[in-house]
Length: 469
Image 1: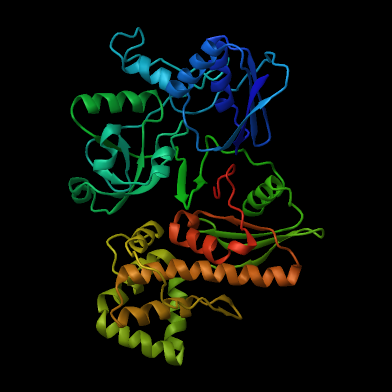
Image 2: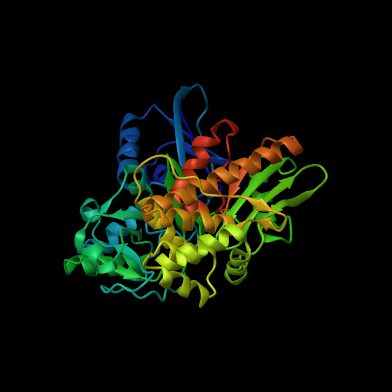
């Protein structure tokens, strides 16, 4: 008899299976590890109880958690067990628990050795690229927090258990969390901040030195970013260059190509509707069928200068603009003298400290209630009606609506708008496979709105591909 574990693994990356295989060989337990699409199979002999116990102890101590790890099914089977070769390529992942133990234990011959590289996942080669990141105890705008003292995570931040698992996973993505520590809040001027745990040798040594000096965190510019979000048990990569599956070149248009890769992931490349909500690349809705692939709906480019002209030329909006100018003259003056994008414009109207998609998103997260205001998300003959969107936001601002509630309502409205368009495309093209893409899903309000209001249609958020460039 044998024990078979079937592990759902939402990636083709082989390092997790490689760790399992390394432990098998180390304890000399008869068994094998195999990996196919989204599945790892571990088959081990159950005759030697001492080796089984040893295997379990080493797994508990040294097998790292992975963000791609899913359900595990364990059963006893009547199969012949024999060893099979397994090799993993090298990956840009963090040091494993063994390496960290060697690096940080004073009695180790690799103590504080900056040349240490992980070879504990059945890999013949190791990833080795220089890292020029600078870490500092002083905060500057747009910095990410490097968590140096893991034992202080609950003192510094408010996080769910799922977020902690992601933060300390072998992939070490950056995630946005709520700041709990008042000193950190005052230092950064933020309620929410991007945080990452040590992700390579250099950051691990920096964290160790900081912890020895009783410094719980450092700041750095995260240039090689792997950004993830955790929403209702869903772990999604927003941006990544390290661990997500590399795109196949299906189409010369980058947005269509990413859509086709994710559609291919769920075997519906020729029958899918994609909702691409991107702060970076704009908003579009993509349809693929037997005829081909096209952007069925594309939002027109935002122009603040043209928007203000259109508002002044509209009978009703001109009155709104005049009333808004009387109450908030500095806001109008600022809008008229700058070439802001849409989310910068909305940030100015809401009088936020910073002007960006991220600033508006963070402000929206401050609202803890349910149900937003009705923000206009209309279309005109020229495309998306930015005048109506900004006009409705200005109207609620004039009515003394709290800024965090208004910001929340904007993201909720984007979700409702996307659902409405996808429903219309479903009726027109008779397609019911829905794929969600774009970096706007970094906002958990928008993400949650799609999950709750579009649940019957089962929209697909890729676990293997990043949602945007």
